[in-house]
Each structure stands twice: as C-alpha cells, then as structure tokens.
Length: 346
Figure: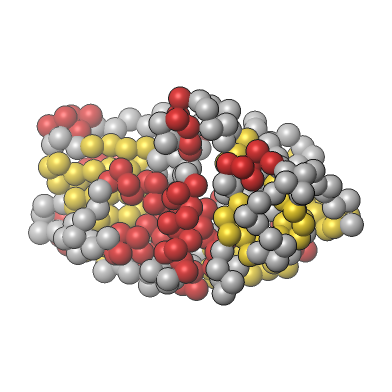
C-alpha cells in the first residue's frame, strides 16, 4: 500500500492508502521522494480545473528513485535517481514534429489527466518512458533542488523567445519562485541590469538574492517612474510579467525601449483574461510581444544541468520542505505568498 493525497473536488483532498500501481512490461514504477507545489496545484485545489477529473492525484514537479521496471525497459535500472517530465506528448502531431512538443495537440499530463506526484509511488506508462519523460539524474543529485527542473524549464522556454544577451537591461514583475528563476537565468545570460518588482517586500528580498541589481516595491512607489529613473529615461530592453496581474502586462509594455521584447509569461485569471494593451506602443516602437507555455524535454535537461551546477541555486528558491500530511497547509502558504517555493517530502 502507498499513501496518496487524492483530489476529490474544490478544497477536498483526502489522504488515503491505495494499492501501489502495477506495472506492465514497458512501464516504470518510481518511488516519489519530493514533489514541489505549483501555483496551478493550488488553483486546482481551490477551484478545480477542466482537465482534472476527480478523483485525481495531483502534483507534477517530482523527483524520486526507480523502484521497479518492466521486462522490456532499457537504459534504466532500479535505484536510478530520476525526475519526470509531466507532459506525455504524442510525438506525431504538427507541433511535436516541429520540435514544439509543449504545444502538443494530444498531450496527457501527470498530475492532471494522469495521476501525479503527491503520492509515494507513481507509474510511468510505456508511452512516456519511450518518449523520454523519465530523466536520469547523477548519483549525487539533490532530489530536493531537482524538483525545480520543471518550472525552470518553463522559464528557459519563455526566455528563448527573448534572446537576452550581454548588456541587456531586464525588468521582471513578480517576485515569486518563477520571478526568482527568471532573475537567475537572465543574470546567467549576461544581463547588465536586472530590476525585480513586486508588492510584497519579503518576497522581493528573497527573490532578489538570485541576482537582482535593484528591487522595487511597486506598492510603495510608482513602478514606471522608478524603472525609467534606473535606466536614464530609456526604458528596459526586456520586460517579463511573472505574475497573473493584468496591470503588470501594461506596465511592462510601457517601460520598454524601442525594439524591446515583452514576455507575457504568466497567464491571467479566466475572468480577467481580456486585457487592453496599447498597440500603438507595439507598432511605433517595434516591440515584440511573446507568450510562453510549458516546456520541452530538452529544456528540462538544460534546467537540471543549471540546477546541478548551481548556475540557478535551488537553495535560494526553495524556502520550505513540508511532510505530505501538511500538503493542504502548503497550498495555503502558496496562496498567501509565504516564502518562495514549497516542496512536499513523501
């Protein structure tokens, strides 16, 4: 038997003893060690989600150790440290064939349409094994830090559009775990000036340690005035909205210099998804605006290497490790904006 946190509907998670999944000849069974809490996990808990049909074990930012493998599984061994890429893609649709598997038309997701990581064991079916969803880690891998691989891979995906280079000035709005990772990655790419903004001073101080040159509490001062002052009135080369607040998108657009790049990284709440932006700024300043969604397996592999080499320091981002029994408490902490990243130990 295994312990599992099972989502039955909004604000209804039950801790149950369940049978350990049986595996077939092409499957892998993983003993989950850690699973980080994503903001989406919190939204599912509070409101439900269309692609999550209860009862469901949620959680998709997981690491663990291979417990068992099917008779036809190659290149993996019992005892391997691994992480799981949550998107089980089809490999044959237009987007998969174009190398954009994050946009797969037939994707299944661990923690959403498939059971995820808030349980002691997870079964990875043959299709996912064959697609490369199980990534082997070094024997010395820190399984706590490695839970950041999936969100960091999404940050990598978002920044690939932006082409941040040596000397760029970058504004990041939102000082959560994602904002902190954007700071660290922009710094690693050679950004000369990184400005981090948020309305929560404690999060600014935590996330700022990842490499921000300036932090702005936009609850206390005018964000646009401060950014223009810090850039000698020119504005920034790149703006990234790492929070689900409509006004942040408008602010990011307005403080870009000519030829700037804007990443609308964070989605907006469903009832505020229509957000007017000044398209004349886009037109006359030749601004490029990008969306960003999920990530690919190669981006996961890059993210893990950045974490393993401490180019992105997980210890500065993970602020709490909780036992599974405190999962719902962890959801509440994320909703309140306490700390940066919260990880559950299974």
